[in-house]
Amino acid sequence: MLTLKRAMELNDSQVTEHHLIIHAKNVMYAMGAMADHFGEDRAHWMAIGYLHDYDYEKYPDEHLRHTENELAAEGVDRADVRAILSHGWGSCTDVKPETNMEKSLYTVDELTGIIQACAHMRPNGISDLEVKSFMKKFKDKRFAAKCDRELIKNGCEMLGMEVSQVASIVIEGMKPYARELELLGTEHE
Image (cartoon, rainbow, N blue to C red):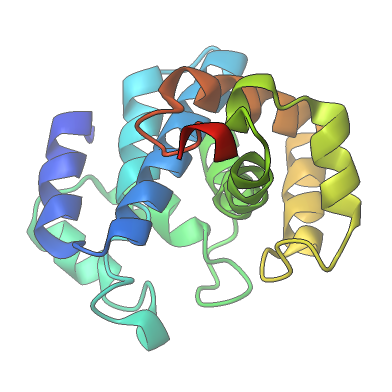
């Protein structure tokens, strides 16, 4: 099973762009919160979240096409590699998310982008972001337009949850790490 320490070693050996590191951390903390929700291994889910875009910086136009062989060569468990591949279902892989971990990764990868954008606009960042405010931005397709809302809805449906429920879990899971995630808000920049 992939440890958080090993995921960080692997990811940090490949990913150097600041925004990609921040994204990895956003997804890592979101996955930790989702693991808590499902009563699963928090550190393991966080490791999967941190490593999910392992090949993106090196191969942005071939995302996830190099992940399987490279991570297998690094000794990453087959199930963990599958979980990582599943977040690209429908766009760059045909690996359909099946477990709660896979479905969560598929969903929060995009969801954290909208949460991050919301927090950046607020005086106090994520610290006082409520689901109601998030949902207003979620419904505005022009806001964080690159984030695929249909994918998020599909992922939430696979989880048997509402978007607002998953967003609440993820927002609360990211709040304690606001400084590290650079989500302290416009008053603190």
